Image (cartoon, rainbow, N blue to C red; front, side):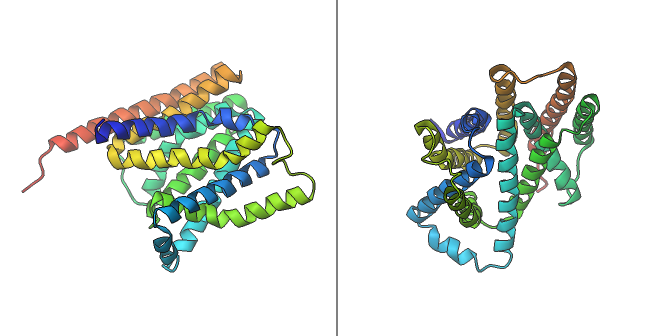
Length: 299
């Protein structure tokens, strides 16, 4: 298997894993959300710390902490990903899987807007049209249901901001996540100890399956990240952009067909506008990429 093909399947594996996450987190819905998040942080942090130590990256990581702005950057990233994880797991347990999928459908377009208004990048007309089309879909859902889809916007917004922070971050993906989870690990562990002392702790006090799922929260967090990092190194960014829609598509299918969440006509119309926007955005990106490849560079 060549490098590109291996990268493609790593990408499929990463996004498919994120897509079926609702099945995993739904199985621990009876555990308080804060405890689930804290277990995810603690076990992820320990797993990543071991990986960094084994790979010989511990010393460079410690040295990087003295660089100006590193701690501030990753503290911001840690706060954003913690809010994103909390919102995602809470929404799954509360029966809002369809709304979480909408959040990750609109996330790429929200990231584009941040690139325009924060990084000063420029959009082509078709890209602006895609953003407007997606915005109309979200607006339609808000008006038809009488409320803003705040879960979708929270997940899309925090993850888009997280991506923006990580774009400017100086460390690699594994080192960066190690530092992020490390910053969150101490308060997370303290909360779990407090819950145990108060008699509310779930770990080792529930069924064996629940205990195993909480313990495995670190592995299911880290494994897709490693697959994604491997994919990003091997395949064009354009492919990564297309593969990312695997995750919300699977989430939507799970919400509707596995957990029978309502998918009304109004939701169908709103989602259709968002899907049309994503299709336009993807096609425009492919056309622009081909044009840039075909145009010879001046000598």
